[in-house]
Length: 258
Figure 1 (cartoon, one colour):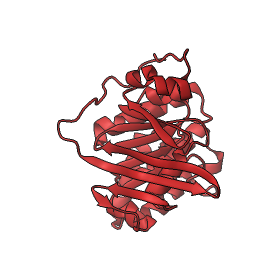
Figure 2 (cartoon, helix red, strand yellow; figure 1 turned 180 degrees about the vertical axis):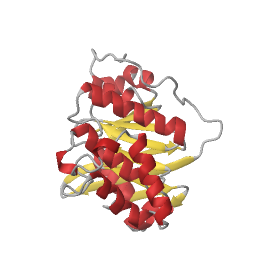
Figure 3 (tube, one colour; figure 1 turned 120 degrees about the vertical axis):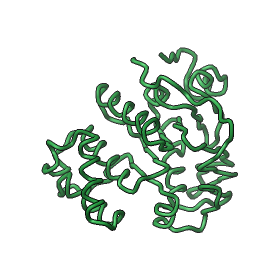
Figure 4 (cartoon, one colour; figure 1 turned 45 degrees about the vertical axis):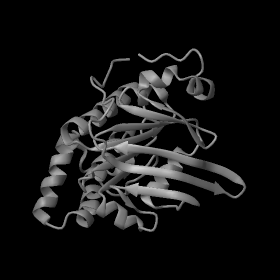
């Protein structure tokens, strides 16, 4: 696989966490989903969460956005505890963009109508709204399909649409949930390049969760591995694949990266 990311942020001269999870625990019924989760994401970082299906990656995103609340622990965004903040307040005050694994768009609206619907909520000035929509459709090469209903778009086109919708609010933190799932190789490479460009050109902090290890490790600076509701390893891609805990719980002995 071609190396998408030509540089990685391995350390920060001055750490400025944009997101911090502190002793987060959550159960659904008798099942422990997350147990004492601790990690932070620094501004400007592309951060990855790896782990098998059902390990709690999407649950963490739901906690960050406010869709669900933790039983224990604290969530800090921009240094401020947000446990009691409603979803819309978190999104607007702290500029969070979220791209869900499934959906995220209006099926019977065209690509342009989807962007317009979200733009009317996030961008008050009509001229600024039109300029932003035109900029994003051009940036993601969507002009030729702007009048096609979203339900008829390809998997890659839908992903680009939902990312564009998430960018309408000029997010400082972008959450991407299983963004490589069920996509072909060329579309995955296209999305990897988009992610890296958002970091380098727009200075957006990005958090990706996925269970496709190679695809995620190709474009992140640092990642964590989740297993049995806990963070069992953290590091750069090269550090993670050599980590004994990550090998035994997730990668296996034969996993190769690049």
